[in-house]
Image (cartoon, rainbow, N blue to C red):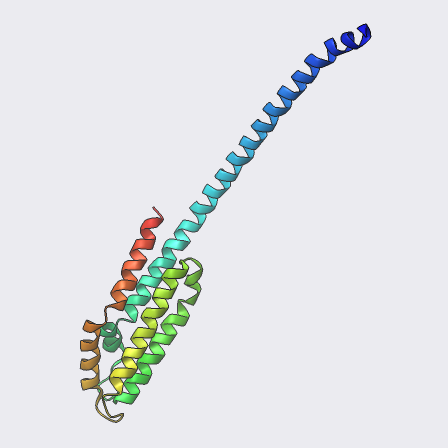
Length: 171
């Protein structure tokens, strides 16, 4: 029995020392891993932040470019008929959308749904306004009706506000 107490007298302090060192080192290495993960995340954010901001800028530009005022101003030519202008406007909106489609990876799902809703609303407005005119009519009256329609459809303003709100979350 004495031999057991003698053995315990030497092993117990060694065991306590071992466990203390073990837990201290484990805590130290966990902290180092967490610190390195935070550093990597900060580096990743510093690299992706400019890309995200650029994507939001592109989406804001998309909203401006499909604004009916701007769209009609850019696309209408004096000799166009209602049908021709409607086709040109629909194609222009779709091309703008397709050109900015890749920006959705930087935007939230809700923001992208708002952007799609705005695009669809603009296309619906183009189509529904064209239905009030004969296809062969001069496009001037149709253009004026589209611009007046823009005043009653503030969906693009809501999309721009959603963009601004999401960009503010980055900072």
